[in-house]
Length: 208
Length: 208
Image 1: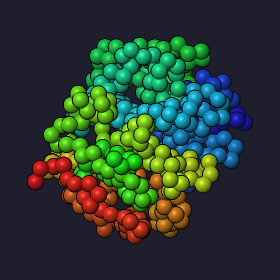
Image 2: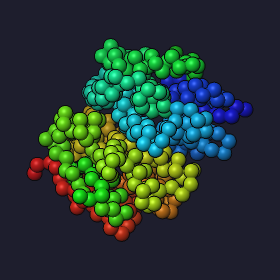
Image 3: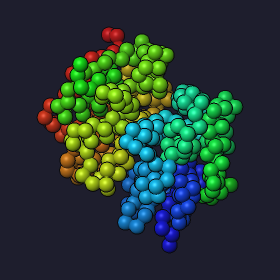
């Protein structure tokens, strides 16, 4: 058995955040595939034994069981000494961006991409989510104009959190060309040694 | 000048989370009112000098300037020694709930309450937000059935984060009676010495 077990699936950018961190840090990890599209996360067994919130990812490390990608990234940064903060001010800055990511940057975009990109829906709800997503993306675009990563000149777990959904190519109605600083930042992360795209780290759960 | 300056406004439950923490901890603080409904958070001056993300709350403590209620609560717990974690496992559990709060529990509800409760909108978007809110609330309802606070038997910043919007009475189309465990939990927090409801801590910014 590998040192870390990650419950997740290919389409889950939140799972990818963790899979990417484990990979970049050279951790010994294995995927426990979650059959999301058959409703596994909503089943009583999953809620009882894996995550009462019915969400992926979940990381198991010995006796430690963690949910929420932000908490898992923080834990792994501490364990591995990689991509973490160098001082308290930086720790707070990283955490601020991870909250912003969960609330707005990933939050709205992941839901938009699920409804539009995976389910093929286009309606008032996706228009609303796209508008909220664009506001969040414009903030990040501006922030990344003139600096290489979210926290200055080196990658941290704030970047690994925020990049979770940007490598997926399903249609969302948001043209990548609109956000050149975000594209260059995504390329910089993709150039880190060991980087792999989402579906190379976890197979798709959605039936073809 | 007070020790802490809080940029916020009455209708902002995210600001209330911080105002309540400062009040319960007996901190010396003052409100710097943000004229949200006149668009102050979207103005260049606010973004340049207070918060580039155009959000409230922001807490200023000497040279330290913090955004994101979760980060501010974490900072205040450390400074005051109140409502924080007793060990690493508890710290991760608190942080997990605060991420869940920002993403889903407050995340969807605050937007629903803004559109429905403050703007009087009722459409497919509010129906969508209500459905997402209900999923999140059912998880918390179940979690609070049989325990007094989010982390066992004593209040922490996870509770102060999650209760941020539950005392507002604007219409959201979610009947409080549906969630008896959440109501009892809210009453328990309201019984803490020094507790005050949102509009007693910060005046309304919305013109009557």
